[in-house]
Image (cartoon, rainbow, N blue to C red):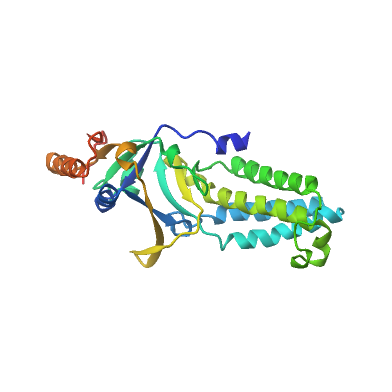
Length: 285
């Protein structure tokens, strides 16, 4: 079942490919930088999921065209989907692959950076912060979104009207079902935000990506990237020295010096159990 694939337990070890400046920041400050989801390498980020949601909503409206109650609810979901574009999600990416050339080239400064091995990232999950796998297969995208629509409709049908909501806040045809619309709509918005955050184009499937996603309201910082500005947040990790277990170096004309410099920084910052290794990929700079 698709929801079991989405909620499956993360591997005990996940890998973050990055440049040397980022490594220094992570080790020196015990913090991760999570970038706004709309400023990722995939230019279709978030929109892939939004497109499928809109198509499924259109299909459901046609199916329920003669059912007034369901039509009212589905119309309300149309407004909810528009609201999603204003929601914020900040992410940092990890890969199941521990030594993948495309990751070195794309994210680790063309093999001049490092691969950081993290252990037990599941421990970082709290309310509003999730660790989830990216979903790449188009059939999984559709199954996931159909599941969320089915669940929202189920909540809508089982929720009794008990005067919990202020009916004046709803459109005239929504007022008889306002409690149900509120309950089902809240579920739909929150879960749809998650879905759009992990649905990715199949072209990226070799990355085997997991995302640590912060859905909380945060104070954003800003950094320059090429021709635009990227909003990001800083996430302090109290047990960083315990969860970073290995630093892998890629190609370097002075591998001994590179290794010695990383070791010096780790020891000074009390990363006493973090080992250093070297990539097996024969890549020449």
